[in-house]
Image 1 (tube, rainbow, N blue to C red):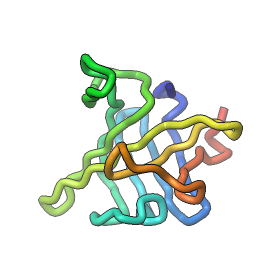
Image 2 (cartoon, rainbow, N blue to C red):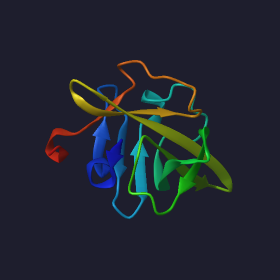
Image 3 (cartoon, rainbow, N blue to C red):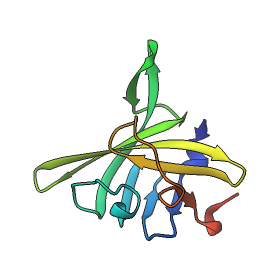
Image 4 (spheres, one colour):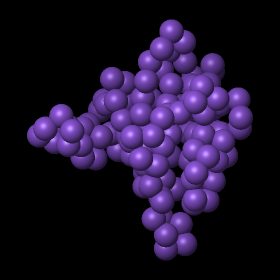
Length: 124
């Protein structure tokens, strides 16, 4: 579980994907193809909105929440040129700290090269 304050900041991977998560639920990104190889939408996002996913009843039922302040997953919705592009992110933790696995479907996984890690200037 990651708190909103820990999620906010700049995340990237060595392949060139960069994501900025804002406290106001805004999200910008570039190089998404370096984190989600099968992503079909524009690989740069300038007006995304993110929301934590929370359990809605059963353990397998998740819904996006405007009020949640922590979570293990979050979703991003972007409308570009009349096309809606969605991404999900799984928040994981390992011996190096939190990482983000961006996916189109929560059943997908990431390779080590695809994982985004918080940029050093933004870690606490």
